[in-house]
Image (cartoon, rainbow, N blue to C red; front, side, top):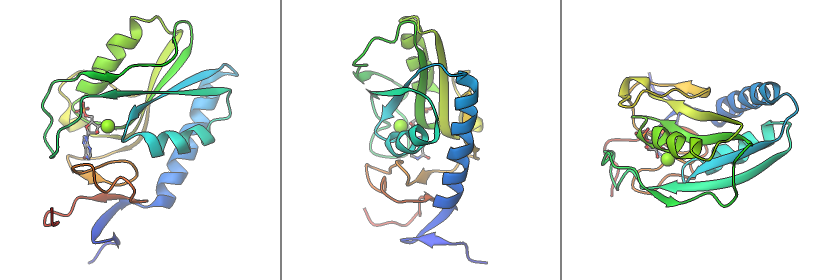
Length: 181
Ligand code: IMP
Ligand code: MG
């Protein structure tokens, strides 16, 4: 049995499957906001495509902000340390904030962001993660909105990288083990 591939990478979720799930997440977020405004905070760089699509799937008065945290490094292993490289541009006090992240993996990144954002006293703070790898969790944290829950696989595409490559693949793919560097 051969599965569908894109540029040699096995596809885990097609662009159509992603679009359908993001539309459902947007509808749920719209409903939960009950007509209130939203600040969508994307975690650079991986969440950029997801934020762009999710933002167009929510029917709310929304603004964007972006943060960047110390990266995963160049390979597939996390260093464990999380550091804020780019802070919020606008205050979030009293606002409905949605952190938009590509993958919830060990949870170190989102636990750190949640902690520092809560110090700014938002009205609400929720998390949307396109992918969740619950088996990898180190910090106790859950997303309020999860696109797909997956086992411990390394994925690329739709914003997600391996050593900064493959972010522009339109589907979510499995990293082929024998790719040239
Ligand atoms: P955490 O702090 O361990 O939860 O890691 C979150 C970040 O690790 C994500 O935002 C991704 O940038 C990166 N990451 C985790 N798993 C993958 C993967 O399978 N592919 C690409 N990046 C990943
Ligand atoms: Mg990321």
